[in-house]
Image 1 (cartoon, rainbow, N blue to C red):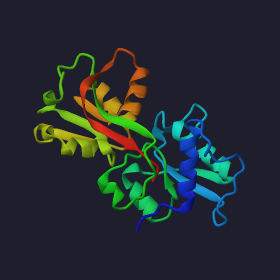
Image 2: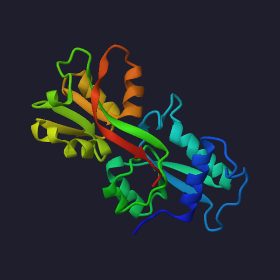
Image 3: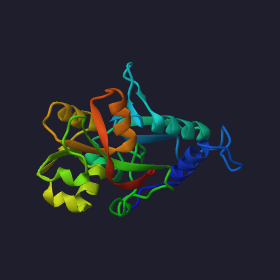
Length: 224
């Protein structure tokens, strides 16, 4: 059963219109649905810059700001609940969260269990390697060990690609930060990660990594 409520639809509209001017933007203080006073947002709190913890251990990020703005416009309290991202659909179906709002890729498979808003951001599944790596193109991943976040669209994108049959192993991680650490330690030959996240992470370690020109495809983020 699809779990997107009227609250989510209104919240997502507020989020999307907050990104730019428009006559249809919800006004501050707009009345919230009577049955809803709080929305619980499920997220991966190690997914910068979309959602992560700052130096004060506060959950911050692009998606966090958008969810806060939508809730403010509706007069709702918002609670951010870190979850195991590989179990996100179970969290949603079990009603432990109301919304998944954290770099959630819209896929046909996910649409079977989750209702989505319109896309709000385009994304690519990029390939990151060490600066000195011999891997230059996607086909060079043959015989290599590749890392990706468990339950992410990166693993799906790899599986759909013809090169998947030649990859030695796809090692799955709880989060992308840990995968990048394994790449730095030489336990991986490459990682596949959302572009917005990957480029943010490697910007903190200038000169240590590079991004291949080829990638594992384009996708869109939505709220589910």
